[in-house]
Image (tube, rainbow, N blue to C red):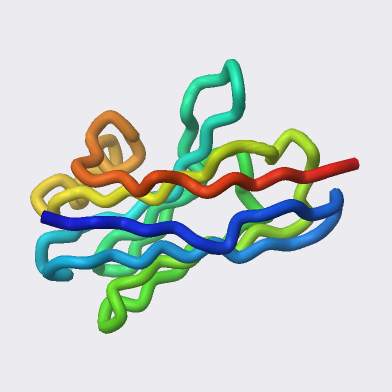
Length: 128
């Protein structure tokens, strides 16, 4: 079993930056891709970024060009650096992981419903 704990959320003014961290417990060999998703009130969950165990990265449209995902496999962590934040980036940000068998597929690793493990989320609030 894998447990995920997010940290680094908070409040920031528009134009600012935040770095979110996701710490995974359990065997790192149980994890293929790690993704960051977000959900704003009244909106559907959407992909922010995902990184495969082999290092392949994919970004959702929402923060493409303003976010960078990275992963430390030895530490079993995945970070999301977000820049030029806007009020519309306000959401709960979730870290999620999926088993290695799925992460070779772009379709599967960019689909939140295909993830096996989820953190509890961290709130990001961007004020204008």
